[in-house]
Image (cartoon, rainbow, N blue to C red):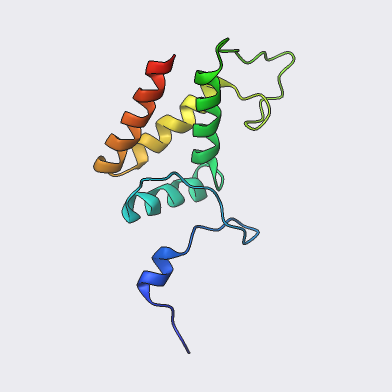
Length: 116
């Protein structure tokens, strides 16, 4: 039976339950990407980190810094995200990554905080 080489396995993007590639965070080492995929499979959902980062960037870049309203907001990350939930996901990601990748990720978050 033919086998894919380890380099080919590492080059393939992570896939969700439907077989479609899921978005991931750029700039991670292969070990960091593996930790992220493991976190998303065990505690979150596929693509959670990329969605949360995109939602946080939108919240920070919005000049009004519109807060989530529990009465009128749906809480879905793509529609009207709850900033507390988004920060919780980002904190989980930062703690799950290896030290070097976590430092890079936290620096990325700190650069966004400067925009706020």
